[in-house]
Amino acid sequence: MDKQNAAVTWWVDNKMFDEVDRIRQKIQPPDPDSWEKQMQVVRVFDELIYNTDRNRGNLVITKDWQIWMIDHSRAFRTHKTLLDPKSLAQCDRKLLLRIRELDREILRQRLEKYLTSAELDGILARRDKIIKFFDDQIAEKGEAAVLFDLASVRK
Ligand SMILES: Nc1ncnc2c1ncn2[C@@H]1O[C@H](COP(=O)(O)OP(=O)(O)O)[C@@H](O)[C@H]1O
Ligand SMILES: [Mg+2]
Image (cartoon, rainbow, N blue to C red; front, side, top):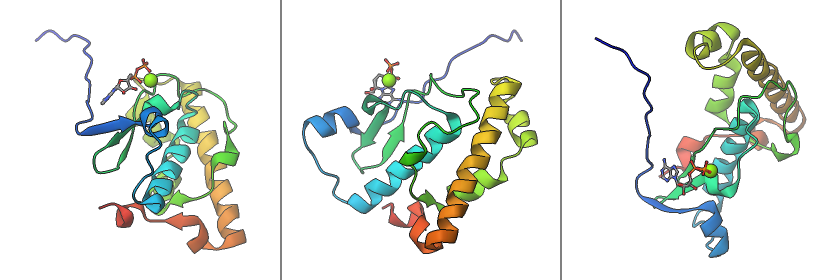
C-alpha cells in the first residue's frame, strides 16, 4: 500500500467561546479555583514546549468550562531557559510527576520523527528548570501550597 503524508485535525466540540471572547464579554468562570488551576497547567505546558504563541485566541473554552490548548505552531524552541518563569506558581501533581519521568530516551522514541536533537535538548533543559522551580517552591512553602490535583476539581 502506498504511504502518503497526511494531516489530522482534532476539533474541540462543544466550544462555548475562546479566551478573547470571554474577556471581551467580561464573563467570569463559575469556578475560579478550577479555572486558575487549569491556567497553571497551561503555563507549565507552555514553559515545557517554549510556546511563544499562547495568545488568548489559542485557548478554547467548552461549555463545561474546560480550557483546551490549541495552535502550537510556534513551540519547541531550542532555548534552555524558561520563557516566563514568573508565570509559574503552582502545578498539578500528576503533571509534575510525568514531567519528572521525561528523559531523553522517552522523548527520542516518541518525538524523533518531529523534533531535532537540539529541540529535544531544549525540552530536557526546561524540564530540569521546571522541576527545580517547583522543588524549591515545595521546600519553601510546603507541598500543599504548591501542588494540586486538577482531576479532583474537574466535574
Ligand atoms: N480544534 C479546534 N476546535 C475548535 N476551535 C478551533 C480549533 N482550532 C481552531 N479553532 C478556532 O479557530 C481559531 C483559529 O485557529 P488557530 O489554530 O489558532 O489558527 P491561527 O494560526 O490562525 O491562530 C481559534 O482561535 C479557534 O477559535
Ligand atoms: Mg491561533
